[in-house]
Image (cartoon, rainbow, N blue to C red; front, side, top):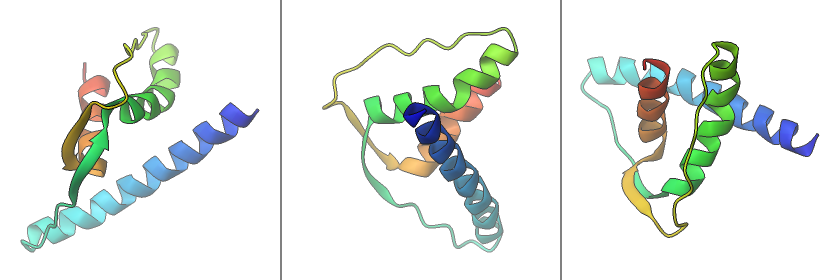
Length: 93
């Protein structure tokens, strides 16, 4: 049950980020987008992505396999935008 609640919370946060992305598009049109780059742990992002995307993929008869990576591996990026890119790449495959 705890894992389910954690997944619900992550999905809620993802939807909130999508709404913020729509607002960012308005800023993009106005030429005022700000990227907040910082160190983003890859393992954490992939774990969250797996929890979010796996149920939809199972419903489509597909499977997502995320191979573990060292916790110290990180990228320098805007975390929300990097996550959205990964979701789009997986969903459009």
